[in-house]
Amino acid sequence: MAPSTILTEDDMHDKQKVKPSAGDIPTQDNFFEDVHFLGDKDGKVVIRSPPKFASVDDERAYKKRHLAAAFRVFARQGFDEGVAGHISLRDPENPEHFWINPLSKHFSQIRVSDLVLVNEKGEVLPGGGQYPINGPAFAIHSEIHKARPDVNAACHAHSVYGKAFSCFGRPIEPLYQDALRFYNDLSVYNAYGGTVISTEEGRRIAEALGPKNRSIILRNHGIITCGGTVDEAAFLFIALDRCCHSQLLANAAAGPGWEKIYIDEETAVMTHKKSGNPSKMWLAFQPYYDQVAAETPEVFD
Image (cartoon, rainbow, N blue to C red; front, top):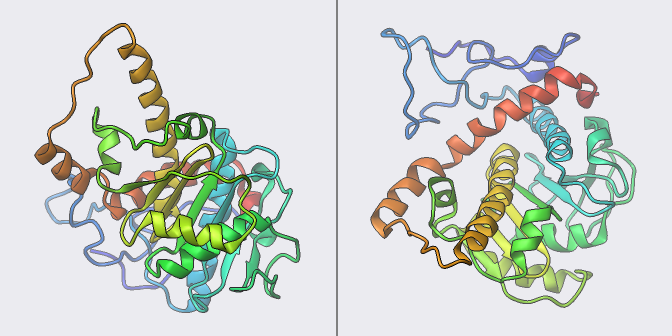
């Protein structure tokens, strides 16, 4: 079973930046109820899961490490483009405040110490990096965090396939298993009035996202994904951009008259529940996190 000692990621990443494993950190009870895995007969071989935290400081440190790593992952995925793109993380102690990347800092160079803490007015606060932030980022993310208390992290970037598919103003079709992560869990914001410069536009985007969906396609703009953890939101972004790519390929292949075969409603709903649940999204991000931790440990500075 899970060990009783509480370990923080300060312990796990000390000096050699050891990456977490099932034996390193205590697990959250029942986190993987819907995940099918095989272990040993005694139940000692288990899937790693988010730790239980001894203090809010430990929780903040853990989440900031995963936020910084998410930017490095996005860089590796090619999601960076100039000053466009941002990931926000709600502060665990002050839920009206959130952490975000500084303006004009390349995703591949972001470290924990660079992360900026802002309040609900967009004012940079002490305790984080003292850098300016992207105005449109605040306009969008602040309204999403305000409208959705369940959303602790939100990702937006001008990824190639996300913005290419966004010009159709349509959701992803249920054509293949991976697309079902977004079945009845994807909104479309069918308006575009230029660069977002006001929180009013951000409010409309949050309204279009709705009370439950975790992802939204912004027509003629790009995509946004959300989650209870930054891991969930970041993996959903990777997955949605790839689904946009696959959808474009399927549409192109259908041009000669090939008929697309859609997955039926019952199967789509069942598969979404199994393949799109938050615990699986958290777990799916960990290999990306591990790669960043192993190859660029300075991200945690």
